[in-house]
Image (tube, rainbow, N blue to C red):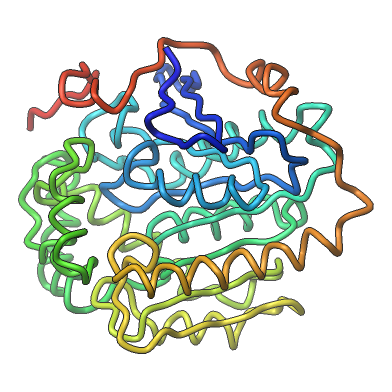
Length: 341
């Protein structure tokens, strides 16, 4: 069953699963209808988030602008298998993303297409770690409030981190880490905040011990190696972000060795620039992103292939087929999550 309720009349939506490390990882895609595809965009979602519902508006918006958009729910997130929101290894998330994204890029019709990473928060950190492993593979990246450093307002105190480091060897899955509520701190618009809170695919419990440590270590690793970023990128951050630190985004912009980089700091905006702001703010952010993408795809126009919606069937070979479900099925969907301690 086509889950077209998760798209619109100008966008074709599909769901599949990608086998990786003995897990079925959920994947989805939004494809333009009756348009030549300009390039490929690969979504990296944030901590506790997911692609099919939370990032639906992002997928639709980019597809309407002429891009083929691909997302993957990380292990334990959204509709993917795994212990609920447990990150045993941050690098495993990076490697899972690389494997899925490569399976799409390697299709014959995609090999000369411009391809971009798009990462939000933790997804921004994943995108930067992907770039570290594939330094010359990407046309560019859009980094929205990337987790290069967790804001002190939500980061566990150093003494707590020290205790957690010791506990991780014994009780890594315990949900005991004290942390400010991400939804309350990330999304400014109260109506959108409640819509996000109502999404059953979003994890809203306390962070697990090992998860918190992996997030802190991954962000600190990036913070210490900002000068290794060399790919073209657009960096976006809300000036009043209370989840990730705008100052570290500024440091990333200054320290990176990329010759093509742009930094936009939005006054008055919070962490969730494309999902949690008033509509006018969201429109402004998407306009900036699409303008940046279009400039880079125009410069790569000679390498573009005439992939159209009629060629969608060729994309299906990248992942194994699975039954697709509509948004109305979400509340009753069975997830292979284990939530025990």
